[in-house]
Length: 407
Image (cartoon, rainbow, N blue to C red; front, top):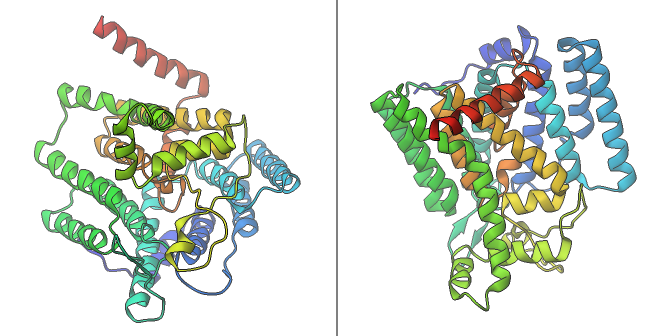
């Protein structure tokens, strides 16, 4: 696997001789800011991105979209940020709005460009952070009991999360990876697991690497493989239902002892999810919740508030954004998965399955810099060749054909 990076060629191919250079610059700037916040770097983040990234994305839509789409984008951004300002919503609410802008304005940007750009820049930034921790430039926070190292990050699960995204992108974009390259990816993920003990990220990486080997050997193109992967269409709805079912069952822990053992094995995630639902509920739209996570505890800081962080992606998304936005978002992911199945893109389906399973334990897959495949999902969903009403008929026809085949 060739991992050499030529800065001059990288700049020419991704910024100078392209229409989407402004878009990639906005994404790169946000990634730089996000990784600064995720690292153990002291002092204020000099790369605050909300205003700069929004301007870049509007410029991108001005040059690459239509006049109507540009006007709609400006109105959406203006009304969205005005509502956020009036409602006093914190920075995490800005991320949701900027995420929508990214997915819409990048609908025509080829995913291989976004993916390769992410592999190059994110790998470089992560390598700098981990290297700085070994050189003593950044602190390497550790925890007692369950031994974990931060490796230059403020929380031990951040490095495995970024590494899983890079691994997924390499497997997806380099379909003909050699066994040596796959072993190299396995070795890096084993290193991250031994140092950070990120079990769910390591488990998902093993699924992806094993799947890549199986698909490499079988080279599937028959009906059996297509039928086998049809179950993947429902990976998000199933994980969503499992999340709410197990979380609500925790409220009946006095009747079932096994739910208590499961909660202990999941490090109290069911308890925290249940408390989140009881204390904050689920509204139609966004609500502001002050989440207290493990980052400050991991760094040894004094924290006055009690820990209330909900790790489950599904519970967390519905509490933060409401059931209307929550339903729309997971329907969007399900439709994108279905389109990937229709296209027989089995590697993409493997990635979507791991993202859905990962969401049961951790909410990092909601972050564009930790889940670049949200861009691909938006691209599949937009699909220039199909208008929305044609797309719905296309999906419904596939479902009815499936049902008639069973009958």
